[in-house]
Image 1: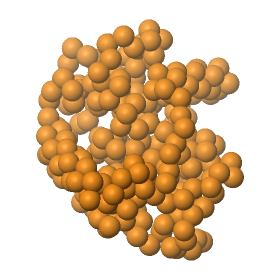
Image 2 (image 1 turned 180 degrees about the vertical axis):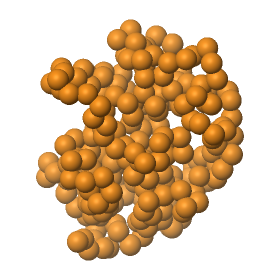
Image 3 (image 1 turned 90 degrees about the vertical axis):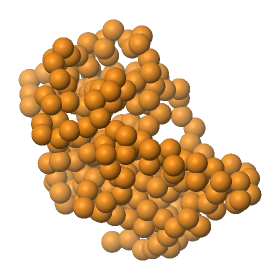
Image 4 (image 1 turned 30 degrees about the vertical axis):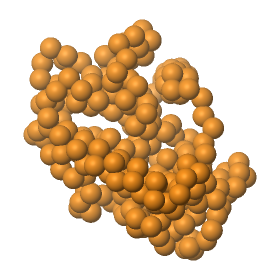
Length: 254
């Protein structure tokens, strides 16, 4: 299917990606959210005569610095999904002035705000009941309901219906991610490693506080990919795409 250990690759637009040097040009967060919502509205009009279609969701869990967002972007371009990353989710959690149309769509997807949302939406699972977690879970469920999505981070795979999720864990050695982050930031590896340790601690606190877990158990995932042996992000995107089709069928790709 694919090889391993190459030093670079290309996405579907022919752009060259060099591991450790990924810099993604992207619109601002609100523009990304608006695109998700506008595409959803357009699809609803196109499918007005059809109801009940549900696309699966891809959830990436990763070690900080492994390159998950780069891989998600390549995959999204191939299969027509939207990428919902930590930055977008945190933006929605913190903002109170969400566009009225999007707010209304979210309300339709997540009713019962006066009840115990966690018990209603997540069944027997019990997570930290805070305003932050309530808004975070609400944002995750809303984007999952709006259309085909790839989530990167924030533990989306832990709360979405497991039969709709392809859960992917990306791992790597400390040396791989330290070199990669040093290249991206243009700093030395000592500084990159210091920053990664801080981010690791923040990530661990998040999962322990919100989910009561470290978030890295292999039992939680469909596939685990080690970037030390698959350097080319395009290769990893292809592995995930193949797994998506194998689990949910060819129709899962747009």
